[in-house]
Structure formats: C-alpha cells, structure tokens
Length: 374
Length: 114
Image 1: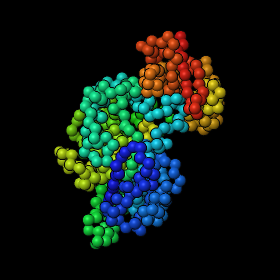
Image 2: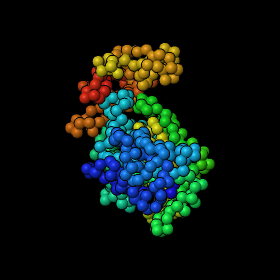
Image 3: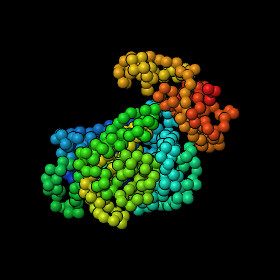
Image 4: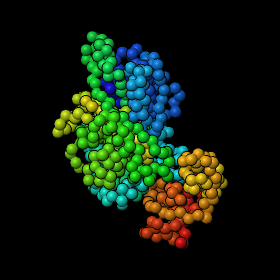
C-alpha cells in the first residue's frame, strides 16, 4: 500500500455518490502524484446500486483500467475490495490498483432484507442487543466495561477531522444513562450511518522503485510511503442470523479470519501494536478483542482499559460514523497513516510496527482481518 | 416463503439428515438431498432469550424473543397478554401468527403451557 485518503464523514448532503467518491480519490492521486496511466484496476466498494459506478469514476479521474467493477458485501465490502485488488496484484494480472469505498447515508446496505430468520427485526440494532445480552449473561461482562467503548472511541474521534462525531464528548455516565433502544443496548453504543469516501493505492511491492521513479520531478511534494499487507484472512460462515448466533459464540468468521491472517503474516497476536476493530455496536469491539486473540473467549470485557495495544485511534465506527462500503477502506487508510508515520500524534508509547484491521458484515456472518507492517 | 405469506408456519426438513434446515430451500445445504416441508403450526419452540424493544415503537414496550425450533433460531415478537416478563426464558411457545406486512416478514408467538 502506497497511499490512502479518507474524506469527511457526514450526513444528509445532496452531493451525488460520484462526487463523494472524487473527494478522496482525486486527493489521493494528487498527494501521491501517482501516474494515472499506470493504474491497472479500479475497484469500488459500495452498497449503492448505481450502475457501472467504478467505470464512471475511473473515466472522471482519467484512468483507463484493465479491470473495473463494484463490490458489495455489506459492511466488509471495503476490505473485500482490498483483498480483490491484492489478489490481482499477487497473481501478476495487475501491478497497481485504486480502491475507492463510497457510500450515501440512505444506502441500501443499512438493512439486510434477505434473511428471513430475523423476522420483523431486520435492522442491525436488534442483533446488536442480542449479542450484548448473551455476552453479559454468558461471560459476565458488565455494562460499565461495554459502555466504556463509546467513551474511548468518541474521545479518539475528537482528534480526527473527518469523524462525524468529532465535536462530541461523552463520559461513562452519559453512555450508561442514554436511551435504551432494545434492552440492553443504548443509543450511545450504536454507530451512525453516514456518507463519505475513502481511497487506497495498492502496488506490487517489487515494483515500488519503478513506480517511485515515475513520479515526475515537478511533483516534489508527492511521495509514496510503503506499508506492507503481510497477512489476509477472510471467512464467510453463513448469511442468516439463525446460523450466525450459535457460530458467533462458538468461534465465528472473524476468529477464523484472524487465524488465517496471522498464519499468512507469520506473527502472533502478541506482536500487534495497533488495531482497527469493527465497533458498529460497543459489544462488537469486545468480541473483536477475543476474535483477534488479544484475550481468551469471554474475557473481552477485561481488556477495555488495557494500554498494550492502541485501539481504534481514528475513533472507530462509533466515533467516525459508518458509511457501509467505506468503513473497511477507511480503517485500512487509518492503519496506513499510523504505520507509515503519517498518523496524528496520539501519544503512543512506541512507534507502531504491526497493525491489524478487523472488519465484519451482517451480524458477524462474514469477517475480514488484514495484518499490516510499517 | 409463499407458505409464510399465506400464514402457514412450515420449515424445510431433510429426510436424509433428519434435520430441520435453515434457510429454506429446495435442497439440503448439508447433503444436497431434496427437502420436504414440515408443518410447525402446532409444534412448540423454546424461548432462548427475550428483550424489551423500545425502538420499534417509542411509546410501547414490546417483547422481542429468540426462539428455537429444532436448531432453527428465529427472532419474533411475543403475545404480551397476561405475561409476566420475569422468567419467560426457557418457556415453550407456539406460532400464533406469521406473514408479511409491508413486504416484511413477521413472526408472532404465544406462550403455551407445557
């Protein structure tokens, strides 16, 4: 990975999806000075049904790619797009790829309507409450532990100029006393669906010197910063809630994805310095600690106030907002900035070297984990 | 789903695996055998967990339940007449009504005596 840019996350504008995509894509091309005629693939991640979206965007930014299409896999569309681009590059079919995650607030990805086991309760908030209650009952995690997640993530979001909640502060008491939506899940434990875009440039690592030499001398401020994708894990165990609910607490797709990614990267969870965890609801971050192997199953609540691993420094999904198809790309851009030393100063105890991105879809039925090295 | 639409509660059953299979389909996802339909109208399910839903209707608390029928887990609502929400976990339920409202499927259960 040699570049990444994320736009402002916000709600309710009348800007069309193509122009939202351009906010990050054009800035990325300008910042890196990457020659557009050398981009082999344009992959767009979005739950928007806009026809031929990747090719429309490619034409506007002046790219004529070999490969161009849109990926939709609900909330982990973004990391799926990155994996697809990685695969093209690893296979030798492409040397470079531009990945663009883009979404509008009214995206169809807000509701998964093809799962009939959810009955009339087809909004994510219902399974979010189920996960929380089961975790509390089965493992004894407490309201205080779980409600600390939004406190941490809102606090981090204040340092992120693109986060939708950058002007908001919440303390533990406010989270605990916020409106109960579906018992025991409260309003401030939930993310906000929003619009935005995020773009990434991937290249073959052996071609780094070549691409660097192609950046012309009049673009002196441009730079390519190399951050390696060392490991990839992707697992889809089912689609329906009926099959997911037993799977999540038995092992789950994200846990399997983490194991695959660590194996490919040849590292263990103890080597991770920094993590972007999918916290669409507070309980998901707790489950993320467990699935990523930072703690044993059921012990996620005890990890909330640890200081070994920097977690969700951009503010997580709760702090940043959740433009569905963008989230996985934005998480990866954040990891790129932190590992590539372009990140904001979060007073980390040490300079991060290994990071993981954890991205889920549809009640954790699908999970993606990327291991990155700076 | 056309059965659910007409208010009939049926689930797909594999005679070879001897299991109720979710999601409903023509073939078993485990062995690819052709599935048959099994009527669950009079069958009893078990409440695995219950939740007070204050989101669907701001002014009324409804009860959302997780129900298990032969390893198939469904989310539905509970008929709240004469219900004390304490200790309803593990109680037996039966499908009172199912169908579609505004193109959205729904399951509505009632507690039955053992």
